[in-house]
Length: 381
Length: 129
Image 1 (cartoon, rainbow over the protein chains, first blue to last red):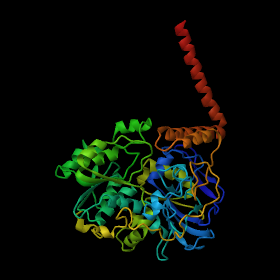
Image 2: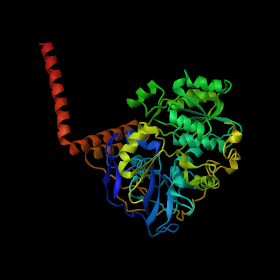
Image 3: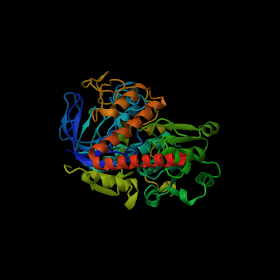
Image 4: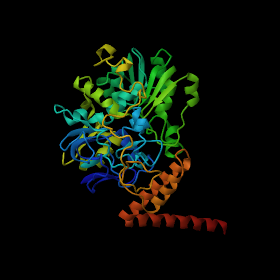
């Protein structure tokens, strides 16, 4: 089958790979119909996630059709259309029983700090990803959600990651009615966090970025007030001025380790003196009000980052963070899509054949051609 | 935008409607579809830190990078050397892969590096004399 394969930082190729096989009784094989490039795939693409091996197929956002199931699979059968959460989870361990499906204990032999994720290095279990014609889906009875017959794949594709991730980001902010929410980052997760903040009852949503098309979409589609941090002297002071000098009630870091905006963080990140650049997180801690909440959904590589934890302590902040427990959110957000409260397709700017994945990554990484979200179409789709 | 204009404004303002509240679900219970207490295991046989019932089988360890990764996995997550060795192994693997794929280019780069080294040594030797 054809699949995207990593060949070092900034280098991807589309190659022939062996077909996936059923390796566990609860596995399924899914023929991929739509697969998207996530902002966090760029961290892999740039070689920033430890144990990203040459030949790895990325991709943790995909829909597809079930082609085969293992002998213990009860809920899926051949021909079912599914959207698959990016987390691989057993559903029964200590963590899964508490709803922490992102932190499953039974799917990652390589580290104690992460669960299992499709196509996201051996640090998250060494699973092959969905940017391929077919993919092995472990714990098929736990993760995949059947796509309702009356819905198109692209309507639900982002239930696999970025819509629940954005929603969980807002939810971890514990937004109360009327509160002011600042979202750092207007990429796909940031945009969904902004929309979700409204669903949770925010009174104001302020979006911060530096890419004109993204700020425009935040204004038009997410209904946010926008701040281009390159056009203000000091983004923290600017945000405080916008919030009566007090700071926002909730700040969300939807950027992670490849943030722009600080030369210091850029240099330290490039020299591996910290795991990427914690610029957005630093701004979030500085711009939130005393006693406020900071929600971290941006991805940071291990092992450390320079963040102003003393400021956070003295301000009495609540910091909440995790990878998204996607499966927990899927039915609820499917209801929002059905009700027309969110149409996730609105953020798709590019659809390209799987064979053009290297170009798609380049467009997305360089934010060229107005690229906000790129969907890949395998030939067999 | 005023919040009244936002599509679906406040529909989830009651925390009880939010799927992730409380953060840890009470009482603990298996996810739908998980009919096992301990999931069955796929055949053992990988070099990680421990055996889990399910694991990825892509890109097994190999070569020099594999040796370095094995060393990395001897160190626990909280030790810096664990992550630094993994990053080192990543770079070694990429370098090895490029040498195999483009030997002529690799040879040219190596020649330039060796040439540069010899030049620097030569300049230093002349300064000393």
